Length: 191
Image 1 (cartoon, rainbow, N blue to C red):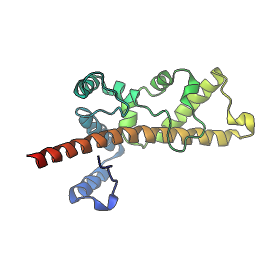
Image 2 (cartoon, rainbow, N blue to C red):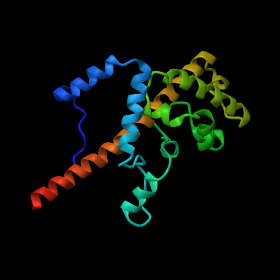
Image 3 (spheres, one colour):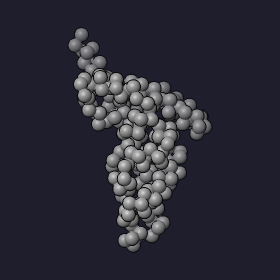
Image 4 (tube, rainbow, N blue to C red):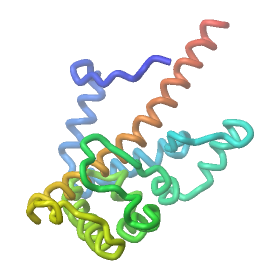
């Protein structure tokens, strides 16, 4: 399978038109558009990069597609991400529960715009510090870092976490789109 290439200089006229129209929308409308586009693709494609079919791949996909959007998005949070320095969700007890409690609108947060990422990252950082106290997690302030430095690292980590969560979903969908295109191309050549 050919790896999908991100090429900003090879956009079609329609792709540029879509970008221009998107920029004409206010943030709320942009959010709605992104959520709707993701949900539309999620009607056809898996978003779970680690999906292991029990039985046929079609059966596994059918099972995933029958789940709620929130459940599907919640299940695919990244355990690690680029530039992760401080945050380790395994330290907060049950990471899934931590995210469920602290990201009640997970699908909207992850599938929508990134405009609120800093505020979301700050909220997650507060909750992480609360969990650190509860679970006696050693923090950088115990080893000479200032509270401001630690706070910056936490917020930066959680911003990276949110970016990677979105990117992981998009990569998973793109991979399936390209696999399907490769199969369709192969079927056309075989005819």
